[in-house]
Amino acid sequence: MTATAKCQIALLILLCAASPARAGTCADEIDRTQVQLDQAIEKDAGSHGWKPESLNALRNYQPTPRSLAKTEGREGIDFTKALDSLDRARAADHIGDMTTCRRELAQARAILR
Image (cartoon, rainbow, N blue to C red; front, side, top):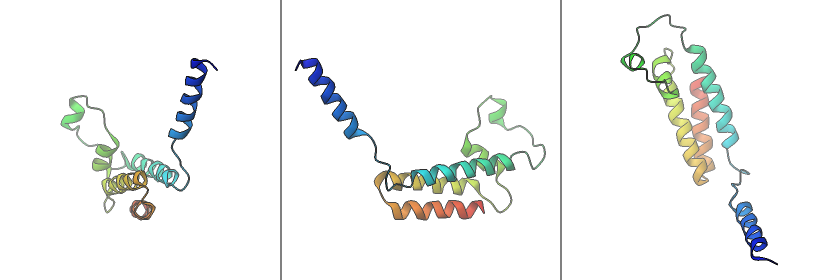
């Protein structure tokens, strides 16, 4: 067996071993909740009528999901808290803490209701 073939086999083994395992994670639930949150923010955007442009808009800064959530939160709904919960859920999922991940997802979904 040539050295090139050995390197290719070793590389293939390393790539297979390094692939992330998604079984047992709540990444799919996080993604679904993120889509629901994005849709809620988008639906609420502009429903309050016209507002004056902010200084950031005048400076041509592009809006981020967090800046939209901050300005577009409806009365009684704080979209930034839902974004914070999703961030904590992602962090918990990253370290494998499924209990915290599911709790944070439940909090984000409760805000969206």
